[in-house]
Structure formats: structure tokens, C-alpha cells
Image 1 (spheres, rainbow, N blue to C red):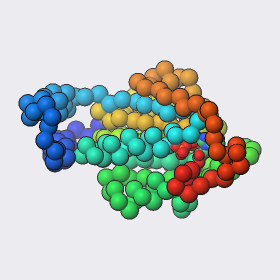
Image 2 (cartoon, rainbow, N blue to C red):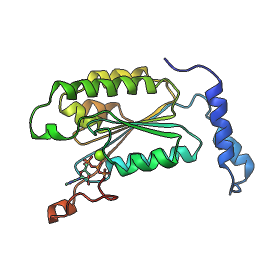
Image 3 (cartoon, helix red, strand yellow):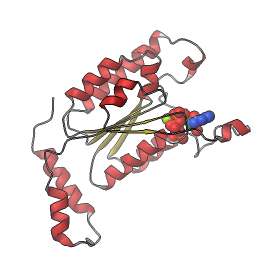
Image 4 (tube, helix red, strand yellow):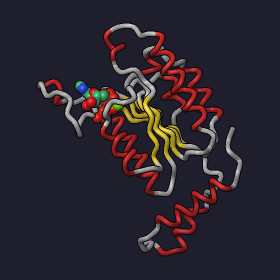
Length: 214
Ligand code: ATP
Ligand code: MG
């Protein structure tokens, strides 16, 4: 259920105000109108980054950073990806950006080689549980990284995803990433970007690089 307490929205508003260290180009009147005319009923958006080109996860992280810069709180749940492995974005955020929380709930990409184990299913179920809880209004933006892959592989039921989006606190923005986004998700999303694979260094024999790929 949506967190109805007024405290989070007051806190968020104060943080947003604190972000304004630079003079407003169009004057303070415009600033006040822009910031407060739609609050607090503003409806959250569902944004999907899919396609087989490179840039989906990094686009989601970029949006998360943007949200933090506007005084918002972000939670990113990484499906498929394994806790303990060094994902550059997760390491950097844990070190420097406390308002941007990241957790991995997967068992790695091993299932690409074949079916998946009970462990993969349990991990994805835990991810969904965390995702559902994270949408109660505590976070302004919830990123579900690689969720599309988890759905495509049969680890997560797409109806559960749709149900979660429907029941979430209405003002929460959600970003869902990963190849193979299901049609039904594309139809309920507000924004869909399909990143096309035109060229990838991997095919020229360049292996996964720290800081570029992980
Ligand atoms: P990134 O994490 O760099 O934003 P992504 O999220 O779009 O990429 P995924 O589909 O999640 O990419 O794949 C994860 C890994 O596979 C990344 O290391 C990425 O560099 C690599 N990758 C992405 N696209 C391709 C591709 N077309 N061919 C080979 N490897 C790719
Ligand atoms: Mg990705």
C-alpha cells in the first residue's frame, strides 16, 4: 500500500529545495510553479529499456543519478546478476550515493546455457518480493534491472509484474530493463526505448571490460 504519511513528501520537497544552489534562469516564480504545481498527486511513469544493443542498464543508472540530483530516493534491484560480483555501478553507488540503493538477487547468467534451477526461481521470487515492498512510496524511483530477462526465461510471471505496477504507490516512477521485454509490458509502459545493436566490440573479439561492460 502507498505510504500515506506526509513526512516523506515534506522531506522530499525540502531536499528538492536544497538542490537549488544555482540561480533559476527563468526566475523564482517559474521555479515555484514548476516544482509545486503538480505535487503531490503527480502520477509515476513506467519506463522500459529493451533491445539487444548496449546501454540499457547504464541508461537506468543514469536516470537514477538524475533522480538523486533532484532530492529523490532510488532503489535498484538487479535480477539475474549475482551478489558479490563487482558491477562498477553498484560499487560506486554503494560508496558515494547513499540515496541510491542497489541489490542483486540473481544467480548469474549461467542459465543462458540451458534451463534454470530451483535456486534461480527462488532468487527471482525474492527479487519480486523486494520490488513489491519498494513500491510503497519509500522510494521515488524503483529500477528493476534485467527483469525482462527474468520474465523471458520464465523465472517471473509477467502477470505478477503487471499486478505490482498496478498496486504500487501511484507517484512512484519505475524503470524496467533487459532484452526481450514482453509485448504486454510494452503496452502498459508510458515510455519504451528499444536499443538497437548496430555494432558491439564483443564481436571484434574485445572481452568484457571493467568500467565499460561491468
Ligand atoms: P550496459 O550494462 O552496458 O548498459 P546493457 O544493459 O544494455 O548494457 P545487457 O543486455 O544487460 O546490456 O548485457 C550485459 C552485458 O552484455 C554488458 O556487459 C554489455 O556490454 C554486453 N552487451 C550488451 N549488448 C551486447 C551485444 N549486442 N553483444 C554482445 N554483448 C553485449
Ligand atoms: Mg543490462
